[in-house]
Length: 355
Image 1 (cartoon, rainbow, N blue to C red):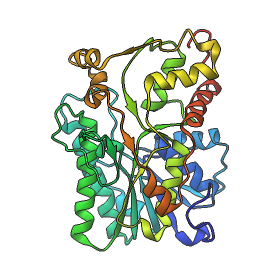
Image 2: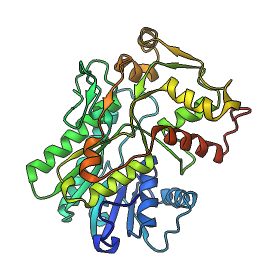
Image 3: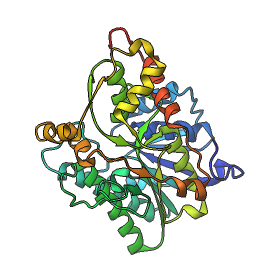
Image 4: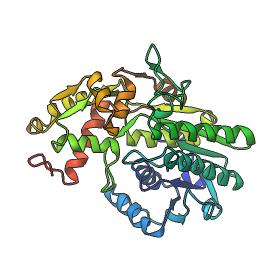
């Protein structure tokens, strides 16, 4: 897949600044940008993280060849951002806190997500960067239930929705703050990408939450799954959509949902894996909890609150805008799930003992 305007040389775009490059999407973004010839500057919280980015490029079989540089800047501080933005033509802002366990207070997630986004966008504006492409989430779109279960870019999750996890609320509030800032100043462009569950090949030793689901299934750690339907999108397609949004004139001021196809359930993911890896059949989930069981268990198990909030509904999530405006063509969901599993096997997961 190519960017929206492949006739324009990457050298004419100036340096691309990437935040969150040690994360799942960020690592793939850096690999894609460098592979296509973009000079890429990565922000890290501390110099030691540079090795993680280089290791991800090695895993992706990409040689930076002098096109990769680093800047030290933290989302929680103004320090370093002015230098990081010097000479930058585009910004891909992927970084946002994702708690592995529910935080003690919502502000532990909300404040760094919102303030960090504003810090990046403000620094970009001060440096004269014409457009920032920000990674938000389907969490900011489809977690306030609708009677018809159909969701598009016109929809917003109400942050006051009962039972809404702190992470989801942080994505809503951070994205709204970003739009408010850009509208108030009027002299720069913002484009937002709202991915559903992101799966696909892993470039680091730390699996994302979505990839971790597949890994845990194949390792036999999830004999039971909650009833939960969600959108799936390949990380490589998420990056492709960001790059298209980065250069396409019609992307300015728009948000784009990223989903590969119809929603699937966790049990459906297990079925895809079972068909492709019959030797893992005994390791994969064999029971799907009802929504009543999920809601009861969520009272004491925070990890189930996401599933409980969806009430077992099957969301119909549109990717028509990304397809029609930006020419985006995502991979099939089945292909993405299998690529996720194959990646885990290449990284050392064994189906015989689940280690």
